[in-house]
Length: 105
Image (tube, rainbow, N blue to C red):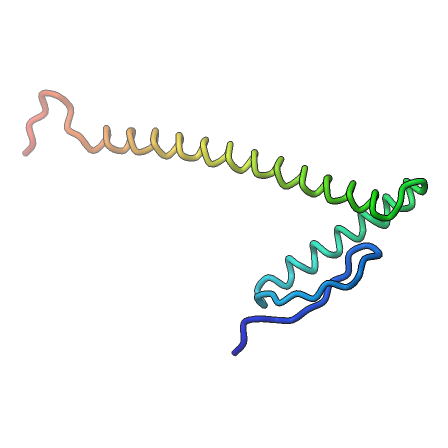
């Protein structure tokens, strides 16, 4: 079975974009297309004095901002989890060691 899928997406008023994607990525790709177009439509109405390309640039910036904000949160969470795991390892190792003066039976 072919794991690749040929699809076409359309962003704003731009030319259609043909893509060859993994079938497992289609839902994410379609969701991205939908949400970019939704924000572009909303902002095109709101900022009537801006050109289509200016609005598209604003949308691209907003999604990039969201991506990097989420990346920072993810990195902070990763650091917190690593510290937690290290402390948990220390606790578990302390519990498993006999106390000073204890004689193993």
